[in-house]
Image 1 (tube, rainbow, N blue to C red):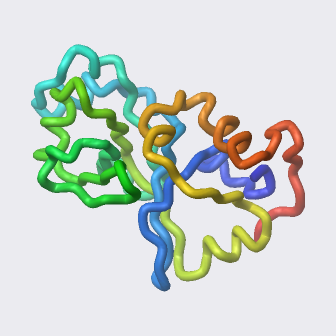
Image 2 (image 1 turned 120 degrees about the horizontal axis):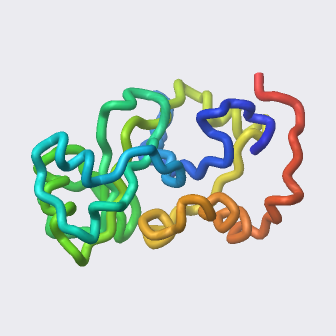
Amino acid sequence: MPQLGDPNFYRSVVLIIEHNEGGAMGLVINRAAPLKLAELAKGHKLRIASHRAEQFVFVGGPVEPHRGFVLHDSQQVTERHEVIPGLYLSLTLDSLQPLLEDPRSRMRFCLGYAGWGPKQVEKEIAAGAWLFTEAAALPTLEGEPAALWDATLRGMGVDPATLVAGRGVN
């Protein structure tokens, strides 16, 4: 929402990966970084299929911006954690390699994550700083990044043009 005021989250769609009494952790899934998967693969000496070379890496959030997270739909990857049905999270380079080569799998590679302390996200939601909805695997992996914020809001029945800045979050 506009009143959040944090430029790290301006028009961001955040997939919450973990939420418990200790806080929350999520990945911004609609902000492309100025880095392509081919450059990332070259830097880590990974093989990459030509169809992946021009795909962008995503800015997953402002915390630990050099740490990688892979969202994908491949059941063939051994190290994977199911986030929602049909959507997995992997954290290792060993998991990234087969995904970079597999033409059938869909994936988003994120650098960094978004983190909230205990009850912080609840306070921000109560203050009107965030809207939330159930996640779905297909838009998470295939949604056009520049259009994902609008599409997510419209899917919730909200017209993005009606959102106006209110008072800031304390």
